[in-house]
Length: 56
Image (cartoon, rainbow, N blue to C red; front, top):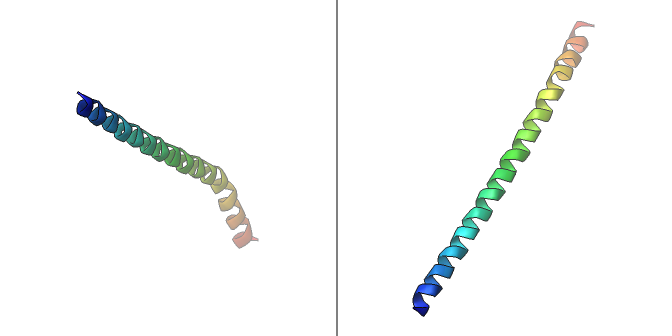
């Protein structure tokens, strides 16, 4: 019975580590998405700057 409890707690620990890794991945993905949206916001200004620079 004690061995089952030990195995169960080891499995629970592994699951919580997996959940932590998944949440870290989700955080990294949301940071990437934020960076992409900032890039997308800056893109029109960059294009405008390049056009003004080459055409004036």
